[in-house]
Length: 360
Ligand code: N2P
Image 1 (spheres, rainbow, N blue to C red):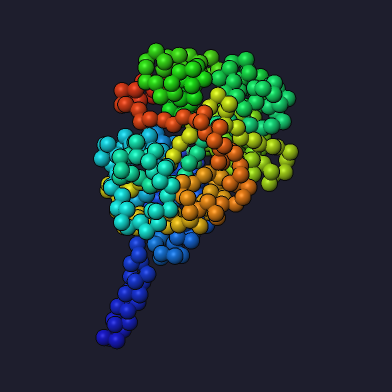
Image 2: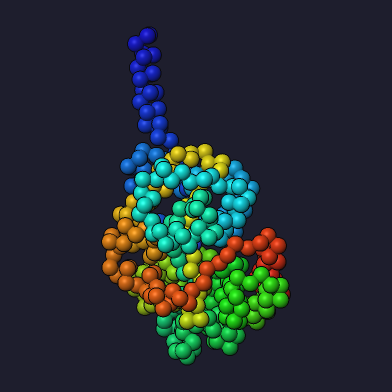
């Protein structure tokens, strides 16, 4: 009898040993990691990862502000992270636990520190631009060449009307659509002025009849299949659509343009909720992502630029030379970034967005 019990104990201990590394709950954007990143991390560390996805900052923010999300690593854009950090939802990043932190581009850290003083609450993951994805043939059949790659495709009623039949999609992201709408009107994209918001709302209402839907990830497949011909989209997502279209070999060619009038450049941050159940594993994961080969593999797979200087040599040459992923200096000069909204502006924006979406 004693012998049997001892065997049981040994088995339990063995299983317990395997579980000792514990778990990690990650909440990331959809289509934002390489195919094997999570599996490789699990194999290297013995940590079991539960991986969920979202496609908008607003969805993530609602979860963060409610608390007890159960997540250990989340990925807000910097301007959203800044507000959430002020609300106290994130732990401070223990940089001493991140042996690969020095791989990050110091210039980028400096830019981010404007919104996250001393880079306290977040580690940059990937960089993106928000621009125009389009079906090359469908669009050139309908509008003049000089309109292609211009915000006119979305914001000019005459141009948008010509594209309506082949399908226009717009991100369901109030801040990321209102900003280029303001910019298109020659107004500061970060203006929180009430009259400016009204002007941008009117602009969007004027093209609303030509917009097929508002969604923040559906456009990838729809562009690739030829079900829509234009979408406001995130750089890497549109470029993934371009690949899917090429693979499907049905004659659909997708292209990405950073609009000539300028567009948004953004940063998504790895952050650890204050109530993360596995905070130590969260740091292990962040340190893993900071390895040059790992960051480069993500970039090579999802076509988003990373802020990891040491990773550059592992990024495929065609990715490094793709101006949609790494914009030229001239194009960069024309990009704008978003500042955190005040709660007051945010409420007005949410109201305006409902008006725009319902078209009233
Ligand atoms: C990934 C989108 C990430 C860029 N699908 C927007 N933050």
